[in-house]
Image (cartoon, rainbow, N blue to C red):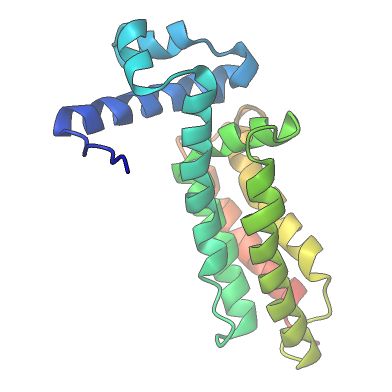
Length: 205
């Protein structure tokens, strides 16, 4: 039986530096446009040094995506089936919008992967992501059946939340070109709009 030796503090730091540099390169150029030379330069490391930690561009990309999936799924997991339905879902909307504000590179990385057909994370989409979405869709359906939520298709509701929140990261240039905001102030008005929009749409008549 073989065991993997624990990483040293320097090794952990270098992995983090590489992944952060790769996140910037991938989110800017996409997987196909990114190169190991670009990532090494952004990380301030030589290419051979980078290849000591990751065997290929694919390996770096997969490591980023696997970490990202955990981050991306966390807010959906937090929806409490015992909570007040409208407020639980509005809180989810606002959490997703905050993630678009705080993690725009991660959002674009994920969007680029999906646009390309999800060649590196298809198993996660078909497996844990689908299972979690189906679980939450069942909870939403139960809320609707109990009269605690306006009639709504649960899967399309979740899709719409992803679309209306991640848009602000994935289409940042377009949003800024139209709104001309100072910094991230447009996220405050987006938060007010989306909270009111979903609260009206989800509150039973």
